[in-house]
Length: 97
Image 1 (tube, rainbow, N blue to C red):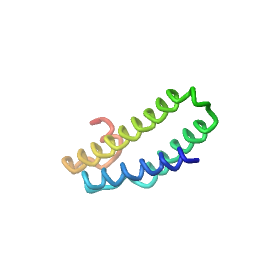
Image 2 (cartoon, rainbow, N blue to C red):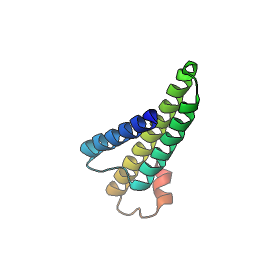
Image 3 (cartoon, rainbow, N blue to C red):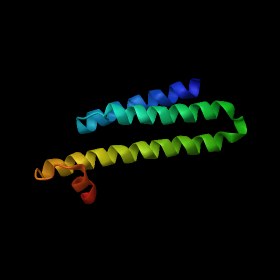
């Protein structure tokens, strides 16, 4: 339970930092999805022995990496849309990513 709370706390702190840097927060759907992933990691980690700390760290790193990728994709998508007002559909944005 402690690990789950700690991971959620770290995610909230990262969201605040992103907000300060970009002026925009992670959308609620992405944030909810990332919290669900962290909660699954926390539940699995609570069942593991102390010898499996490396595996826990790897899982947390994986979640952080996917969060970073989601943030970068959102930022790039917004940047593409801002610089190219003629693009209105998501498929055109994905082609440029």
